[in-house]
Amino acid sequence: MPRGRIGATALAGLLGQWQGEGPAYENLAERIQLLLIDGRLSADVRLPSERELSERLMLSRTTITAAYRRLREHGYALSVQGSGTTTKLPPTAPDSFTEGGEIDLVRATLPATRRLPEAAVEATRRLADHMTGPGYTLWGIEELRAEIAARYTDRGLPTDPDQIMVTTGGQSAIALLARTVISRGDRAYAESPSYPNAYDALSLAGARIITSPVTTDAGWDMPAMQAAIARTTPVMAYVMPDFHNPTSRSMSTEDRLRLLHSAAKVDTLVVADDTTAELDIDRRQSHPPLAAMAGEHQARVVHIGSASKMLWGGLRVGWIRADPVLLTQIASGRSATDLGTPIWEQLVTTILFQHLPEILEERAAQLAAGRAALYHAMREHLPDWELPPRIDGGLSAWVGLPAPVSSQLTLAARPHGLLVTAGPRFGVDGAYERHLRLAITPRPDLVRRGVEILAEVWPRAASTPALALTTSEAVV
Image (tube, rainbow, N blue to C red; front, side):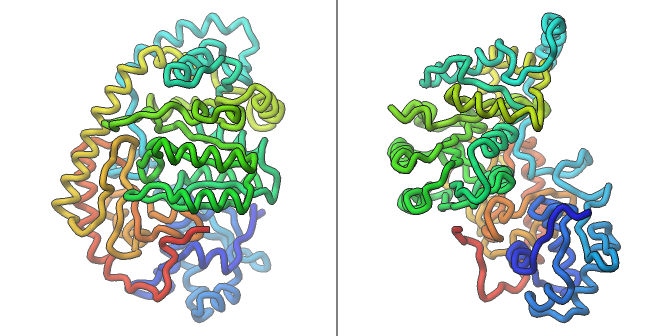
């Protein structure tokens, strides 16, 4: 049974610029396959009928039939007479999360901190102290909540443990907040580009997403953000003020105050994603957490964070820092999806937090090496591409392309063993075909080789004819 349906107009928006060399049916099938692989199109979704899509794309029905047949042959679709064609992911689908020998510039995450093995041993020893209890911790264990609260206090935002809820990763924190705050049809604000899974969480909660742009050179378009919030009065604004994903920009003090003022005027709940906030390489000026600047409106600013970027992706531990009244509302609905975060992982995180300054120095050195490798390789092999003016912290580079062919480039790189995510994954409705996000987290030699592969496949991708109209910089 399909979980949903995508119309021809919506699919055309996701497809963006897909026509290139070779038969049209092959190009169309490849683009739909890419949408499935990188998550822009979900599995078990009914595709438009052949007639509907042929009319929308102004192609022959024979072309659509051949494209759907190719998807079926490769395991990306299933057709049932009378029920149409539904998207599928084959068991062996190449994706961003394989454990093979590919060079992976998709996952912007570092390997485990060298402190992890000893922390795991110590956590196993401490686990016995918790075995007399029920094992369910809807709010999180006391030790970890105290460590997280102390960290916020050290950063300039006095925090008590009762203002902290531990979640099963940062994504869980976003989803829990969205389900609690948003009702179907409500408006929610997010930056564009932004963390794609945040878009997904807001959409699943029923939100209509309003955006304004962030760029690597100018940062936040504050007049556009302020106008969007004032005009649409969103119930929630999701932002990443520190080392924004994917641009790696950080908000100035003035822009933070403008955001808080605009949100307070219409009573919008501001959700600041701190996932990358402490991954500082060499930023000259640090900022306290956003809520510390909110004055009397501090209760209307929520912070979320995650252990995965600082410590290890395998530690599925996140948190929400919020007013206890809001946390109680979240807790009342949380049990419908999970009953708390595993205690052992919370203990590991608690122990590692006690060594966080040392770990962050380790991370800064790793990220600096990856950044240097990327900049050197790009200047040597792809001098026409646009590098961010600076990457002071964070996990990735938001790279500008000379032509709107990000999706074609992603497809061209895969057979050469390179995994990259197309720019539109970070936007709405097919935006950012002129951009590519490249992780700086792999070993420097892998980053360099990844850039070399991009240089090898670039001529083919760049030769794709451009459409007369592109949505590469659309703002919705």
